[in-house]
Length: 422
Image 1 (tube, rainbow, N blue to C red):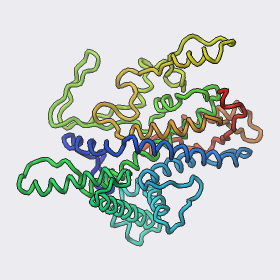
Image 2: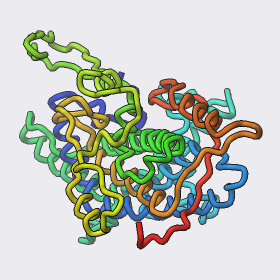
Image 3: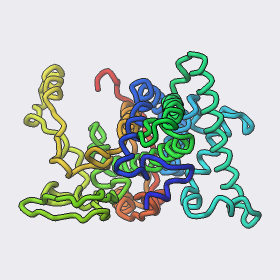
Image 4: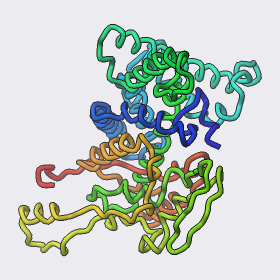
């Protein structure tokens, strides 16, 4: 199943149990604090520009929240990969500009990833279909961009420079390690490699972009609609946790046992898993199991906060600040909440997604609120019920997503209160 992800080459998602640690160690390096700072700042920039765009649509409502969250997610990914920022609405690069073309190629690849997974590349080069030809050209262009970035980064490191600090820097160091080991392996056959090949670098760059695109975008789209339908919780800062519990981007995590039988302990029961056997844990089933989650199908962000007794209406700001300081985020039981997988093979890009999502929601809710815009003749209550029904009407095309997110019209209102009083 995972082999479909080898659009550009082997990657961490398709690595064997014994080979996986090599990929994971190298992929952990790019997701450092410098990259996270860049992701945070870029996410804030994109959100501010998105809010500016939304301010022009307050009367008629935002045309497509789902489309806008995908644009935001794409721009953050493209900026992180190319180390160059983009404007939210339209590009500040011309169509022939290298950075602008890189983002366009990346978008076409990610928007048509199923075609690239299922259709042989040679067929995309034939004059069978214009749309296929366009996808084939974008796939070739994106690969060329990756190769060009690889070459430029290699030259910088060969000159003794630190590199651009982008994701590619760590991959080039891994390639250098691999090439040096190749020379040693010729005289010491059988030693395991520690670096990455060029194909593995390309494969991992693709899967990073694939894993970080619709997952974050879909989660943010769910969050926006749920926040608008539940205005009383927009003062909370824990929406992302609850949204990922109820609407995990991926429904299950396919896993395989290694070459030896493995014992699985479930309560007092012991189950023997045969060698090379597929196991499909369902995130949605576990994260909505009434044994672990009271009222499991209800979107309730407050479940994540343990706080003191309700505040008195005459409570001073200082006392309220102390009360907020005493609040704690609830830690769920092990293996009952894992939208980024769990155990040693958890998602290496989890912090990337968390930083991006928190930055977007924090920037949005700092001085704005999202609201439902009823259709002409429609009551607010009916519009809210329609919005909630929309979040329940989902399909699974690689990832969980709403079928008709654009049926819900939202608007973004700027708060008139003094921010210093918040």
